[in-house]
Image (cartoon, rainbow, N blue to C red; front, side):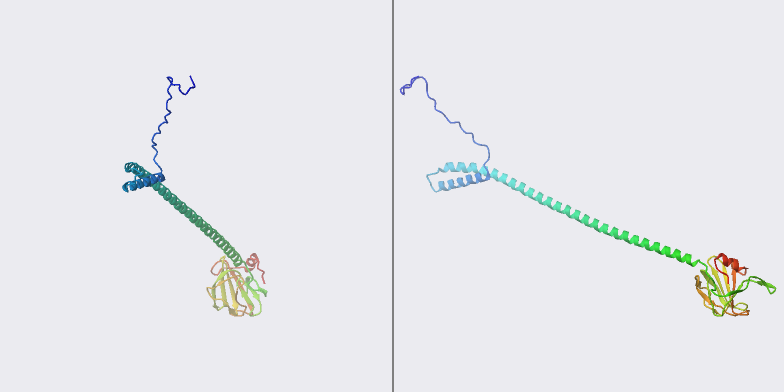
Length: 278
């Protein structure tokens, strides 16, 4: 091959043709579509004004194409807006749901705390009530034990006559001599079954005790209880006297194990109760 510029052999130099670009099928963005629409509108305006710089036919073609694309883009934008709105609504609903759940949880927690305080107060009240009842039961038991103790009918005096035969008949009790007006006491818890004046006994008091035993006090100068009264150990019931068939101030004491006139020797009975005789 000759390097001469005048050489024109069989070889032809082919012109290099640039490859054609395929029209893009991708729709323009909203901004691009807007620019295209704006450009088309401007072209239309220039064509209508007789502007020779831009052919009217080309502007119309460009405008027609842009409107179709803008419609699609705007539909896509509307869909995106709807999607965004829906997502925002969902987020708001989710936030409201979370707030509601949080509120319910807080309400449940407050209710649980209130219930716990109420339960604690109730437990404390029940414990105090139980303690009070136990104390009351203990006090009642103690009072009952104390009420069933036995004490002396008279604190001073001397034995002047025993139980047994005397002057041709049986003397049914003990005579304990003491100055007139000396106090006399109930020997245990009991009920006064008689407080009255009886010819042979003068002022007489009968007390039935909790175990069924009945004591008779005779010749009193004064009676301090009435029939039906309840007495406790050591309660004063009267005073030593010299009323009825009596030859001096003294207490005539009889013990009957049951109701009626069934006397027993008071001395052994008193000893079993731990009570000294005269």
